[in-house]
Length: 344
Image (cartoon, rainbow, N blue to C red):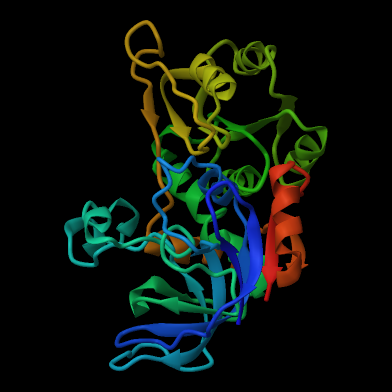
């Protein structure tokens, strides 16, 4: 089968032929119908050798949907032909976090060698994908796989961050979204769907600011030195009750730090490598700073329900598997509107 792999540290993604895997006991094989590309993939491929810990060769792709096409011994709960989405942050399944569906915060996964698909385990950028356990599948129903696949990360990740901040976002509140790209443009829609907040979007790209307005942002501003004053002016000097930074670079974190309100919350979602100073005399009294990771399985179900209701959608650019390296380059260059999706 064809797969998109990272073969050597410092190299780029390549399309290769590898054997089609067979599912072992308890495993499920999917015929992949769509796989999403993410900036996290470039983060992994950009790591130096001394920091890289994902194994080589690595089949990329941590956003995946497909149709069940083979079952390992003992598998129940799904049948061949079922369309499913893959819940990516795999955990041990036995600890307290996993018992409540929060495998994204499993404290044992690393020590047990359990890794998400595309981030250690073979990923979804291939014609077939092995899923380790039926609990890591969510029914897709009649949702379009190409339009839906990015919700497994680009929808789930902002949803998890926003849901954990709901107490700060009643009617009359303000939410700032920094970065209106793949995750941010979905985050804007989620904020509009489940909160009463006024949404202010920031980005350095005019195209992404236009996208932010298209998907429901009340205001769209350049992410520059004037952004903090503009936010303060719009909020009567109070600041934003919640700031969601989908970039995570030092300049954007500084905007977040200076624009969050008293007793507000900053959610650092992006992995841009910045570090934010917090504490007395650095952030407003009562303000909290959080670095959320992915989301819970039940939250993925809720995200898909929002999509079924027409409340959220992902702007998608579609590519064939042979075009995946080109799609990755466009993603790296910031040229993708929304998310890039590969259809094997």
